[in-house]
Image: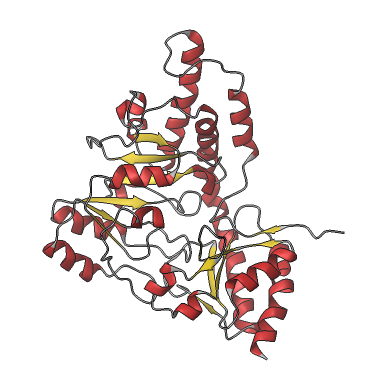
Length: 363
């Protein structure tokens, strides 16, 4: 009999919520183009605007500040294309692709070095500073508000990749002080292939995708009606998901306590600083992440490693090397990320598969 799946990879993608699936399915009966003025078009437009209101409420902005995109990668590009861009060394590749080669260093916990950022801004003021809300690999939270103050002091904008935040921590766009912020629906139970860029009031950006007037001329092309509907449904649920955050953090703490007790040679990165309550980045020296992932996957336990290249091989994580980890250790790191469906049984399944591997490596 096949063991039940222990899905512990919520930072990569959360399972689609039933409410999101239902909202998407309901759009299949809508024939109208959201830009058409007839009744069918207005019905489709109403779905989009309802979702826009839900996403706006999730991050405490007005609906007019929400621009729907194909995902966070496009949203990041829309925010950063005006460059030059100064970014922290631990940013997601979709941000680093737009950044100047010399990134801002982080400390051993992965927190951006604010004095180094201040010095860089003084010497080479960019158009945009990019600093994520929470790291996708370690869960470590960044001092976005402080960085925004530094950026604004030299006339630069602050862009925040907040993809990992909704449903896990309170995300208040205005309180962060950011000028732009990216979101992705599938990280908190919405569908893949849809995201949003949040803009501060009055900010104008040139569209990356041109040729139409959609999204107030910020993103051309007929809107992904089903995806946006699912995004809105997931956003409505994410507003209340923080009620479950303490339970999820307790599961994460159980996992890490068991690791400390039974596998003392393993290290949890960022453990001593503020981070997402659902994320553990575990380095098991001497055991490649590929080996760990294969052993776990054979036992129906699904986790991630640092970063995967197009060949499917596991590369050394740029996040961990930026934190001072050796390349060897960076290739031995896995990420366990919990979500609303996670249970103690998932932790038991993880240990049943992972502990023998860890003990063998320590022998």
